[in-house]
Image (cartoon, rainbow, N blue to C red; front, side, top):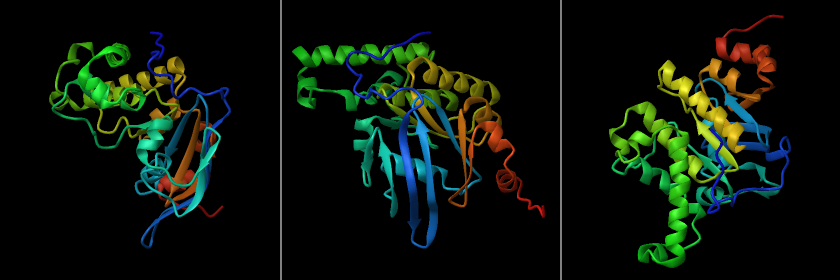
Length: 275
């Protein structure tokens, strides 16, 4: 299915060509008291790629996503996004500039319908203020209809038409994760951050989510950074993989490069080698 973003959005398009650097992370260090969550980590994300961040539990993966979208502010280092360097940024500003994300723990509005949950993802794209929308008049009415049409396309894309009016809290876990992906997509992000999108899913649900992630990347052209523990999924989906262990980068490259990396093997298997 081919799908294009609506005319109501498009706010996060840029002139970067596929393969150019969308996000550059330079020498990021983050500590909480005496605990070093991230230690001098540098890497980049190219436009149009699926970039995986992997590592054992406690390696600093989610902390890195939280730094990228402005939830955490590192003590050292800089992040350059779409050519602009930044040291401190709030999550809502990151969202306005084109960074959207999902979370390890589902963060939907349980009492709201699937459609209304996904509609909340359009808030950063709205040009009219809340008063205009409350009046439901003129330009605000036209804008609301455009946003709703964009959301309906996402609902069709994710194959959740049958549950569009169902409160999200009544849905099984796998479908809730799909709705959360829809809400993140509704913001039309330049960079989509997925934090363990397949955690807790069965094999069929993982296959569905993998297909949607690939389609988002290929059909929308959305750049994706994802954390995932299922190594089969990571190796199948990713263009490049970065590996963290105890907050340090110990590997970075193609899936094949990482699969053969001795430091990565040691980190996952918990063994050491004399040679």
